[in-house]
Every structure is written in C-alpha cells, then in structure tokens.
Image: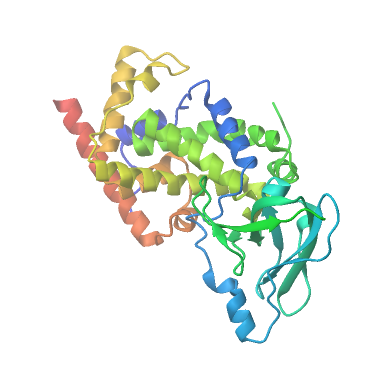
Length: 171
Length: 181
C-alpha cells in the first residue's frame, strides 16, 4: 500500500499540522456550557453508548415475576422533610442513584445512593421536603430511568421523562 | 502550565470540582480544533463540534475507562461529532468555504504566498469525500496507526488503507491542477 511518496503531499501534511487558532473566548464558552450541565440532570444517552433497554426491568415485569416492586412509600411522617423510600428493580445494575429537584439532580449525593437488597431490588430512604417534586433513577451512572410505577412528567430541558412525587406536609 | 496528570484531573472533576475540567479543555483544545477545522472546513461548524465534544465528554466522564488516556477518548468523541456535523451539513447542501477569518487570525503570520498555498490545500481537502478526508487526516496529520484508526472509526484496516491511498492520489491530482492553472 503506497504511503505519501510525493514531496508536495509532504508539504501538505506539514501545512495541515500547523496549529489552528481558536477564538479567545472558546474556553470561557465551553466552561459556561459545562457549568450549566453540572447544574442540571446529566444527559445520559450518548451516541457512543446506546441505551441498553434490557438492563432495567420495569416494575410491572418484576411484579409478574413475583419480585418486590414498590414505588414510593412514605415510611413515616415528620416535619419538615419526610422520609420517602424509593425502590427500583434493576437486576443488572451496578449502581442506582436517585436524582431529583430535591437534591439538585446531584448524581453523587451519598444520601440518595440506593442499596441492593438482593434480587436486583434497589432501595434508599431519604428525607424529602413537602411539595411537588420531579425525580428519576440513575442506573450505572449512565441510564436515566423514570420510576416505572409513578406518574411521569416531561423534562422541558432535556426531553426525557421524569417521575412526579408529591410529599404532603405532616399534620 | 498545569502539569497534573489527566487521570488526576478526571478524578477531581468526578469528585465535584467542575472547574478542574478547564485544565483538560486548555490541554486538548488546539489539537482537537485542528482536526475539526480540517474535517469540517469552516470555523463555525468546527467550533460547535468541538464545544459539543467537550460537553459530551464531561457528561460521560464517569464512563471514561482509562482516564490516563482522556485525550484519546475525547478525540474519539470529536471524530463522531465531526461525522454528525458533516452529515448534517451535507443534508443542508452547503458549499464549502474556506474560513479566511481563521486563517488570517493565525498566531504565526503567513506570507501571502504561503497563505495562498494553505488555502489551496484546504480547498483540495474539502473536495475529498468525507471518509477519505477523515482517514487522511487521522493517518498523516494526527499521526495515528491503522490499528488505532480502526478502533477509533470502526472501519477495517484494509478499508482505511484504501481510503488513505485514494485520498493521497486525489490530493496530488487536485493540487497539481491548482498549480498548473
């Protein structure tokens, strides 16, 4: 297979290897975009990583299989925030995190990291302030999964659905 | 100049230090800009693809399996972004225009003759089919081996060699035509 064997093409390569200057504002614009992303839910569907639908079972499938599938259960009432239990059945998952407006969509908030209770049932109980909330599960740091048993709301920023949660005030 | 290893910076970003990502941007922007500019042929598309690549890299940083090779991983994202941008541009049926602004603002002043030569090269490059341009740039400008190129592009080594050969042949013809005109 011939390589570049012509002086002119050597000149071409030499010229093309010269640095390409960037607009002076490039770094600032990129970091502004990245900080905006950091404040919002991660966009999780990358063209390099197609969504593996088989990895997360719906709660309905889990129920059919006789497995535990509970969505959101107020564990007990207290004021002002109330403990809420989140449950997702995801047998193939390595990590499951609850992200929502109540924790700033922080994918690394330790208090919202679910634990595997066996059989692919992931749960975490966390204090949630009274009010209307949006949330979702983050599976393996990459897959955005709305709660299969909760009502869904559209996410106006990223287009993928989230789940709705209403926490009532303690009486 | 920040001398922290890529893996350390990646670790800091994943721990919540978003601003540490700026070091990675500064470290890789020029080499990435060169590829995007040559591949897409104008500053606006290249700038958009490059910014998109950095943002996507940030979003997927937790899935960077070898943070010591962050640059190679970022470059893979960029190659994909350039493909997408190129396809979008093709759909819009835009005509390639050399980015004279970028050329004029180059940090090193170009004599008029060299500037014209550079413009000829950019025009010849733009006349190549996208897959040949991509293979040529990865092989000779970015200096990748065929195995690396195959991993990066998902195209077989034999096909890549063929694309490079055809790109070289085509460039010779195009540049000869320009010089003899």
